[in-house]
Amino acid sequence: MPYAPPPAYGAGGPPFGAPQPPYPGGIPVARKEPAIALVVSFLIPGVGSMMNGDVGAGVGFLGLYVFGLVLLICLGWILIGFIGLPMMLVAWGWGMYHAYQGAVDFNRRAGYQN
Image (cartoon, rainbow, N blue to C red; front, side, top):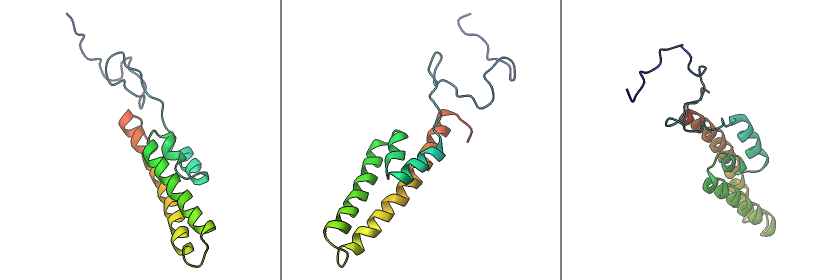
């Protein structure tokens, strides 16, 4: 018999909430912590998304934040500051939201309970 019958529920399986490998013999992935991704993205915009594996979005958030900072500092507050400061705040806030939701979505796809 090449295939074994499925195990009975509660009998010798992995504990509740443990990740299931995508195929027999597969390696389960480590859980991402949404709170850590949020705090890291609070300190440096975009890095929390990079930690979750979404490097393109993380670089975009960091680049948008730095570009807004350059507009704010180098070109002055009077004209360009009204564009640079909101750009920085949007990149910062959206980056934190994206980092937290990215970690939650990663955990959900990997089979972890949040």
